[in-house]
Image (cartoon, rainbow, N blue to C red):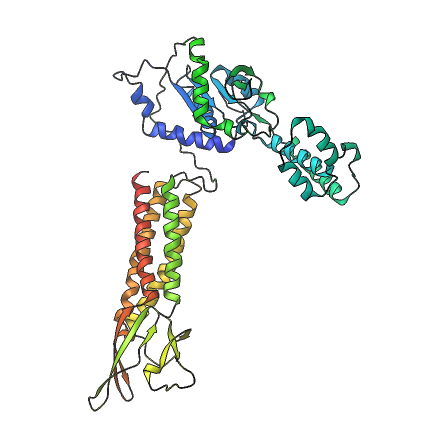
Length: 472
């Protein structure tokens, strides 16, 4: 029973998610049902690296139902349970650590110790730092190592402690020491098998029972990362044949009646993706849709207009073409400023500047007003959906919230499509002029295509939110 004991909060949260899924889908109940061919098998929980830490905590949660279970954690993090509970967990947990693997040594005290040692060595350097950097990069045989360090480093007793940097460092260390006194150290859980490379060439490993206190510092070596690799570890364990030396224990399984599932754990951890990768994918599409939709209705090239002017006497002539947006139109400029006739449309081209529609120049009709409203509404509702999806990447949403997200994205997709009522508006129809009538034909331009892309992106995000809801 781990009641009242301390463990790593993030690992505990992940383990509870796994535990809730096992209960929700009744996986273990099916495996150990009376008619199951696996009911006589022993339950063993295993994991590697962070999965090893989750396996250790998950095994604790499962023990009331499976008091005889065993857990094997391969190269787990070094900060799982508090000191007292690490001793108690030896009853069912075995941790395996290979060589100089850095992960079982990644604890806050170890990293702070490494930081302090780095500052001390930096203060000992008596040559220019750039020279020390290149000297360290240069290979040095062991026979010359002592003399090189003597030329590059001074003794700790000779370090100048009266500098402003030393004073700031002293204050910082005192503050950290005060905070650390209030915290509880966490260690590797269970019994620990340390695999030691006795030859130095990774051809022979010797296992021995290690103490959790032996992993109290980060070992900086060329194997600190490679020792964490899984394939070599598998081969090492096969060569050691540890299974043949251990007695197979008969384990008793007691399935506790848990018809009433515990309340699901919901903890906010940034980008922990409790819904899996689908929430992050939906987030990407939502963000792309929102940005694209904003750009589409803020520009002045939603449509490209071609016009035909009918004079009062019935004469038909081509009118000026231009690009227009929801709130502004594109200004035109002379192709050649030295010889430009503003009445000749062939002498003009589109510029990079937008001009808001002058008040009173044209009467804004209902379709244009509706298109403007729907475009603004798509931005606002889309922002709400984006916030919900962003939240879902850090905390698991309740089912009602998943339904709300689906509805919000559906509305964003719908109102995003309704902004194309602009094509039925006054800018794409007949305008009565003083000297005749202007009939315009509109085709989508770059901002219009962006609006189409935004609707497609909203739809893809909608499908993704539907997947989140379906797999809840």
